[in-house]
Structures are given as C-alpha cells and as structure tokens.
Length: 521
Ligand SMILES: Nc1ncnc2c1ncn2[C@@H]1O[C@H](COP(=O)(O)OP(=O)(O)OP(=O)(O)O)[C@@H](O)[C@H]1O
Image 1: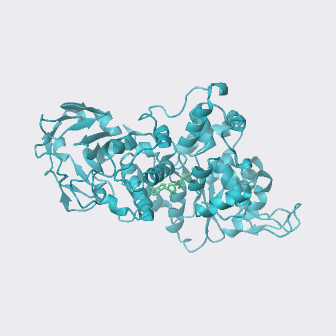
Image 2: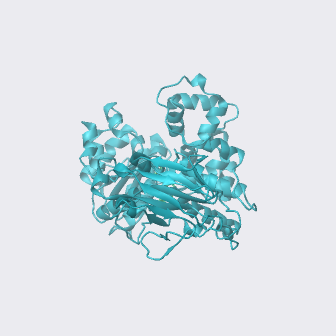
Image 3: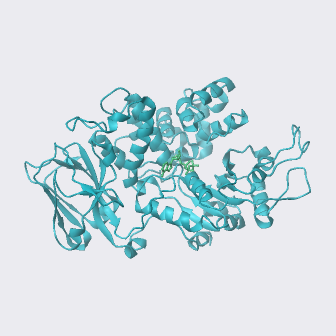
C-alpha cells in the first residue's frame, strides 16, 4: 500500500525502458565530455542519419558539433585526430556499429583499443565513452529529439534528459502552494531544487529557511522548529522564534525529513493540518503562512512499515513528489559539472587559463583516461562527491600542467566502475578493517548512513567501529577552537570542513550550529 502512495503522484525519475523513453523519440548522439578546450564540453552531434539507415563519418573535420539549443557548430578540430574518418553504421533494433580504419584516429572503448565494436540499444542507453587519440572523449548515448529546452537552467548545471525533466516539474509546481517532497540520494541536488522552487514562487521575496531535521538535537527539536516561550524549559532564558515563524511568508525547507523524531512528526502533522504552530510552553497557537518543501533520501515506505514514519505525514508532505536522479543515471552531466566546479577552483588559484590553452598541441589539462574514469565511476555521494573530488584534484595538481590523481583520490575512485555500489548482504562488523572503513568513509564524504549501507553493516555497528578505531576521530574529539578555526579557514563551507577534519558530516553540522557559527549550508 505504501508504495502506491508515491505511484499516485508525478515524479521526474529518469526514463525507464518501456516507460517514458518510448513516448519521446530517441536518437543516438555523441556528446563532448572532454576536449583540450574545456569550453567545448557539452557540445553534441545527433546521429540522426543512422535512424534513416545511413552511416555517419567522424573525423577531425566533420561533422559539426553544436551546443545544445544553439545553431552554429564546429568540428572536433583537434590536430591529433586524423582526417581519416571513423564510421558509425546502423544495426537492427536501434543498435550501432563503430568501425575504425588502421592508420586513423586511435579509439579506446572500455579501456581497450580495437577496430570495430557493436553496441546494443541497452548499452547505448547506459552510455559508452569513446576516447579518441588519447585527447578527446565522447559519450555515445541516446537523446530525446524533441526535448524541451529553456535558457533558464534554474541554477542547475547539466543538460541530461533526466535533469531536464526535473526542471520541467519544478516550473510546473513552483507557483502553487502545494507542499513538495523532493526525493533522491544524498548530494544529488535536492536542496538546489528546493531553492529553485522558492525562487520561482510568488514567495521569492520572503525568506527561504533551510533546516536539517536530522541534525536537530532531539530534546530541542520542537522548540527549534516551533519556537519556545521564555522559561518553557531549563535554559530557555529568552523566547525563541523557531524556524516555522522565521519562514513566515516564505518557504521552509525540511531536509532529511525521514530522520524526524516521532514527537516532531506528530507536531509537523498538526501544523500541516491546521497551519497553526504551538511554541513550546504556550497554549496559544500562532498562525503561520509557510510553504513546505521537504527532502529525504530515506525509504519512507519501509520506515512506515516498520512504524518509524507516519503515513499521514508522508501524504501531507508529498502534495507533489519530485525525484532527483542519481548522478550515475545522468552521466552526460558529469562532464559539465566537472568543468563548472573546476573553473571555480581554478579561478580561486588564478589558473583558469588551463581550461583554454592557446597552444592547440598542448597536452590536455584533464587527461582523457582520467575523464573516462570519472565518467565511469558510480558516484555514491553524487554531485557533492564530484565537487569534492574536483577540489582535491585541482588543489593537489596546483601548478602542474596536467591533473594528477593523488593516493587518497586513487583509493576513492578505486579501480574503476563499480557495478554494485551498495552491499546487498549484511556483513559482520568484525570483517571490516580500519583501512576499509576509512576508505569508504572518505568515498561517502563522511556520510555515516551511506557508509553503513555501502559496507553492508548497520548504522549502530558503524558507530561502534568508528568509536573503537584509534585513527578515526569523532566530532566529540574536536575542540571548539579547532572547529571554529576550520570554519573560518573554510569560509563556512561544510564540505570543505568535513574533508579537512574527517568526521561525520551530520555531527559536524550539528556542532557548528551549537557553537553559533552560522548556518553552515
Ligand atoms: N545540478 C547542479 N549544478 C550545480 N551544483 C549542483 C547541482 N546539483 C548539486 N549541486 C551542488 O552539489 C552540492 C550538493 O547538493 P545539495 O545540497 O542540493 O544535495 P542534497 O541532495 O540536498 O544533499 P543531502 O541529501 O546530503 O542533503 C551542493 O553544493 C550543490 O550546490
């Protein structure tokens, strides 16, 4: 029954075979995911001729790649690519064949060179990376021919079909008053969606208040959310406004709503039903005008079955549900996001020129093999993890002509594509070595929930392992001075703090707030 709750509402999940993808005509396409001139990343050539049964030639000089939505095109033009073309040939049922002549541009697919490859439609749907001449990387995939394009990106980088659907849904629901539930894996951009909803709503001039329900101290959760009267509890020397009242006239974003303690769930339900907030210690209700957007990566239906989440609350929160696709499900966005974050990091170092070298013969700053590796990685921490990886890469390669993977990133990226990111079976905690524990914590950007899932142990076992581990610190081990210093050095960027201090993201966020250091994220 619980699954039905969400089947009944619209979602923006990525297309499934036999589902949405059948209604939108799909064509094979080549999208530039790495080129010595980084500004070319994202340009595309649609292999429409294959649909009509004709072959397509690809060389240094043809065809013309265009930025999505723009008319003017350019060939790949890299001087190391041959003028002798590779050929794409149609195959039955939407598959295709790639043929490479000896003496032409070298092509690497899946880590191996060769002269000819056959790609079935399902392989194209997942996307294939083609390394050309060790310098240019293309993603061979399928795109919708009639995809809706708008110049307004809603602050989200990426041009995948799946992200396009999210944008459409955001536009459809933004100006309505219905509460929205944004679902999706950690770091996939749920808060960005919440902000876009606020920005496109008539409430845009009102406040946008973001609260991580999972980091609220249990005993103070009600007063933080609903406010408290002076003297309502020990230590309440002043009355507290609470997030609901602070968001009056605007949008309240409840992140990690699946982590809300039972008593907060009851109170939230009451507010949603009546629009009235009872500050702790007060019997007089306060009427608030707040639009709620909630987010979760938790399996709420399972939590409901286990009696840990209230079904009526899910119904109330999900007036409309939006599903954020995981990064691995929209691989063409990886390249654009990578360059977006790289530009920010390089700007900060004064090295942005590396992205547009003047010498066309210079080695690319992002080596083609590394670009392929990033594209084939499964990104359990999604866009947040990608942003952290870019930062790590750029800083540790500072002053170098090319990006280099250091030892800690090597461990994080592992040996390549992980087919099965989440451990399916439970393991004994004793089987997890401290080294593995540390590796997975780093991979999951110190998100303990994701780490426990990946290791295949319970969260309680993970806390035990972390506690017993001599080389892993917890937030409790950090002094207020150390946190405060790091906060200032990282300009309040929580992710950068987590990377530096190497402690649980959530616990650190809670501690930062307790120390009154401002709204870290
Ligand atoms: N499409 C995007 N374009 C640019 N930046 C993005 C995009 N998606 C996510 N980000 C960035 O990635 C980081 C993580 O995104 P965000 O906080 O929105 O994820 P989340 O799903 O809310 O994470 P969590 O579940 O941990 O709360 C943020 O710094 C955000 O700005």
